[in-house]
Image (cartoon, rainbow, N blue to C red; front, top):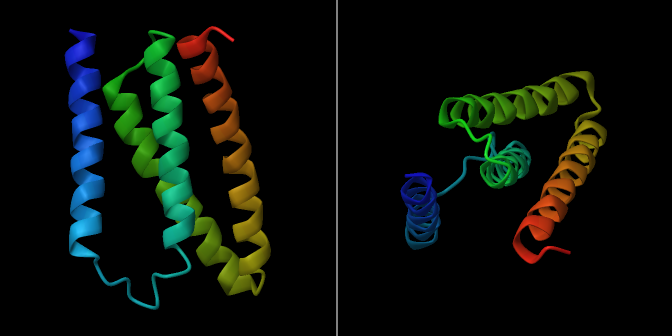
Length: 116
């Protein structure tokens, strides 16, 4: 049963990327500072979800809530940084923290998949 959900999730990810590449949506200038942070926050959640799947503790409700919440919190922190005049510093901090989490999850996935 879990295999079906994993395959469906992978198909949805590929279809979503394909739609984004095919349509090349325009990003308004007002949203441009938030997009890279939102993408990194989303990637963090996806890698965390993949790790949870291999650890056999994946919960789709937790994944969806985490996905939306992580993106919203990251965008809020960037917005707050812009209001305080330190947007670049906070954006960099968010990228560093989420990058560390992504690499940690990637290492766990490597151990699960390759046993090394």
